[in-house]
Length: 445
Image (tube, rainbow, N blue to C red; front, side, top):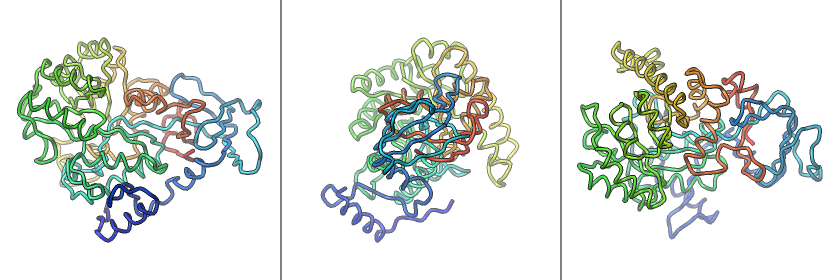
């Protein structure tokens, strides 16, 4: 994907437009609009936010039970769900003047998706790690494209779990660049809402130079965690992986010290843990979630269930690597070793998901777009991948909607409820009998 860098002239134009709209602090614009946003539902979303739309004779799939509600009507008024009712006993929707009626026969209303693991500023693909070192202007352009793709695919919320610390070209602040993006998207109907973990906290040498906040010992880890919250992060992300080792770089007690301090400030801690020992140390240290968890065992899963530790799956990452290997030459993923690694990781990840589900672990679905080969807007693929492990389709949809909302601490995220935001979307077909229906987005509310 070729993305156009933001020139100084273009930034000035964006700043002038933002200033005219009132989004200014001092001389720095607080709103950044993507160039050429076409066909992503932004005009429809703006209309829905100020008018009334009646979706008539739709099915409803809320991801909370295996029963598909049929022949339902939903009235959206000023961006909120005013009521939900069987279509043959609708309440009065009000005057016909200004009311848009959508014939929804053959369509299913689905809550806005919650991607529980993503990286806004990288496009994914075969060189995903290199893109974290792109110039700041490019990082912003990439995020705009990722946000457009994700929202168009029905994603209403993004849990962003790592972006580089740089000077934001828009607000001038030196911190994780996704934090500024989060703030500027907060009032935009054409982009998902974002909660961000700031920048990864990692041991030296694990991630490419300058990408992570590198910490050499437990004291530095604690100080860096506090600094992330001071800079505005919503959660803290620990990269629990040692260079050239399968062991955890920190003990369970050292992790617990960070968790206690961050919990005391009202935030949560999550852990990147691809291997068993790091996952075990993270769980025993009390983290709120394990990201990836590709090599869990039954004992760790039992402990996660006992503690309420969530698992955020990203099964489409090794699948995306396999796709790259089949379609692209000259990459590690096109070598025999790369294909073998991706295939084995997928097998272990699927087994870990089964073990976690059987143990009663709460599972949330993520794509890891930007941080793996996967791309924005592919959460439907993760739902299909969870179903392939034996999860019921309605449960997999729940993992991609309200379960993620719980993890975010957002009670309305991923839910269909009267009085809640109308951030749902409609798909062609029934995602309970055919999870691939989630790819067939007909309309955003």
